[in-house]
Length: 292
Ligand code: ADP
Ligand code: MG
Image (cartoon, rainbow, N blue to C red):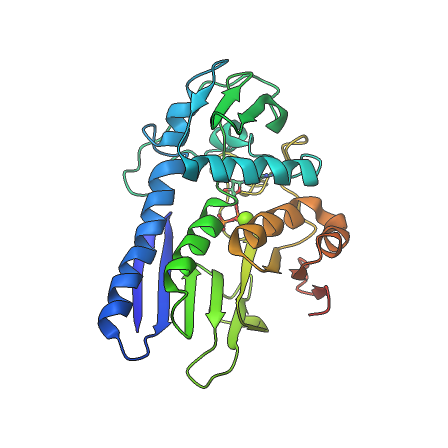
């Protein structure tokens, strides 16, 4: 059984081996899509009324947030620590300034107040009270992990089935096995020819996420795409695409974004994280990492 919907400016495709209960499969797929809606509503940077953007408007005061948003913020800050700020959820204002500020459904653009020099260190969390505290005006951007998080929540709904895939525009979790009882065969898309497969992976109970420079370009600066080095504010170009395989999609999502921004240090980073990766250079050389 296969169903498709649009969330987060991405086609989400869910495939399930339903066993003997088609009805249950339908109901669970519906709940899986609901997870995407919930994550998007909570943390869209493009909707002024998302919980995330409402929280960003309150400076120097602890703001109570939902468990869902808190979970994303915790992971984002943890990952920022692990990468020494290469991964930085405070890049939102830079993204806005490069023209990544338009809602894909309404076309409305957003302009948020922000201080000049901001980083993840200006975002403080209090686990006891489940609050977020911004030391300066800034825009929190969870775009590098929200899709992965939604994929994981959707996958949880589909766990009872022998096999399923939650695929959000190439970022995906492959659960169990296919209808022949084998691991899922997943193709990584060719960076310049979307119809072609560049590399094939065999996955079972694993996620793979890809960050590519070809995906979204800045409208204000042709040298900028949607992956930004937080201190230089430039887009790295060591790779055209970085795919990371991880046990859950939020980790694969964060790690693929970070690998891209790490540039020449991507391999070392992926190895240190004990993950696997497929990196592609601008002249389409494929570099595999972690024993793929
Ligand atoms: P996609 O959303 O196309 O799947 P990614 O998962 O790689 O791609 O996420 C890209 C998003 O990550 C950008 O749109 C932006 O919101 C955010 N981002 C860009 N640079 C960084 C960075 N250095 N650290 C954290 N997030 C970033
Ligand atoms: Mg990512």
